[in-house]
Image (cartoon, rainbow, N blue to C red):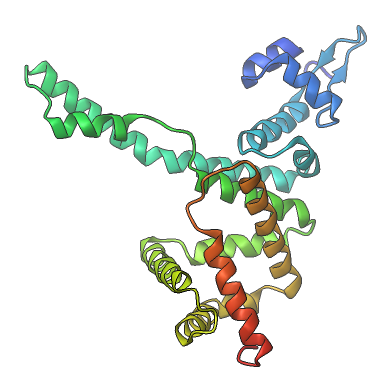
Amino acid sequence: MDGEKEQWFGPGETARRLGVTTKALRVYEREGLVIPHRAESRWRLYGPSQIARLHQIIVLRDLGLPLKSIKRLVGDHSRLRDILRLQRETLESQQDKIGRAIGLIEVALCRIDEGQDLSLDELATLPKETLMQQPTDKKKFLARFEALIAEQDPTGQASRTFDGIKKEYDGDTHKAALKALMEEASRLKAAGDVNSEAAKEFVRRVRSRTAGIRRSASQAEQELIRDAYVKTLAEAQARSESLWFDPAVLDFFRQVAQGMRERGELD
């Protein structure tokens, strides 16, 4: 250990800087997630590599991943990049709301300083728009989904494919189209007829829309992504978490597509 080139912290200082407890550090060590350096006095010391590893662990824990899954993910430099990207996206999703919240508070303060009363609408809007909440269930679900893809994909190709899908369907236009698509899917599912022409036509349109994705991704990548989705959904349901979509709708159209394949109506 070269003290002139690297800085090292004891457990207390490491815990303070990272915002965790020394007990958590001991748990991570016991689980084999991070191995501190041992000084000649046998004191535990944490240097740059251990701190980087701890950062990955803390971010993944915040996203709700169990230690068993985290153990398979941490330690890879490319994985650190993915984890930092996930954390950045989560923070960026809150950035606009924070800006709006500060603006509303500034306006309210100006009104109060001028001796004016806030209107009933303003009083009702302030709590909704200015209370900072934890990341939405959607963000957590997608973060776990991506983490599971990365965990099961040692080559990183499936993760890159999923990144491509997100980029292709990003933007307000695509989001509005996707919302309309999901609303139509919900109506068809409510009708409950897996053999209806409307349901089959919906499947054909979705397959046409996603043809480029299927061509660019290998069968193995598609199966890996589907498997990660199933596992992420099962974990969310086990935690009784609310979801922004109805899994039963997706299952309904899986049945529609399966029936079409069996009848030779779909490749």
